[in-house]
Figure 1 (cartoon, rainbow, N blue to C red):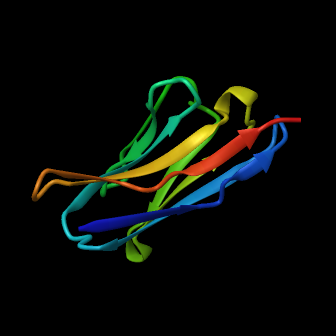
Figure 2 (tube, rainbow, N blue to C red; figure 1 turned 60 degrees about the vertical axis):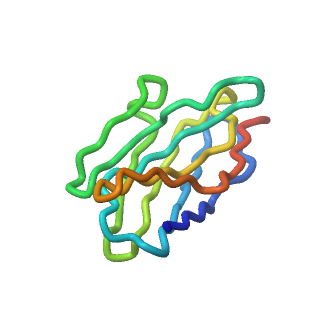
Length: 117
């Protein structure tokens, strides 16, 4: 089992920044891709960004140029730096990990990000 715990969310004004963190614990061996997803009220969960163990990244078009995903493998942590935040970025942000050795998906509990003046 892998446990994922997110932190760093909160309320920020439009144009502001937040940095989310997700720490993985438990059976971390075999984790390859880690990613962030988000779900706004009344909407489906959507992909935000991902990063492989080797550092390859991918982003949703809606956040390209504003969000940056990074990873500290030694600390089993993935980060999401969010700049130039917009009200439409308001959502619960969830951390996700995929273990390639057992083809298993793991999700964090999620953390609220609210962008509002």
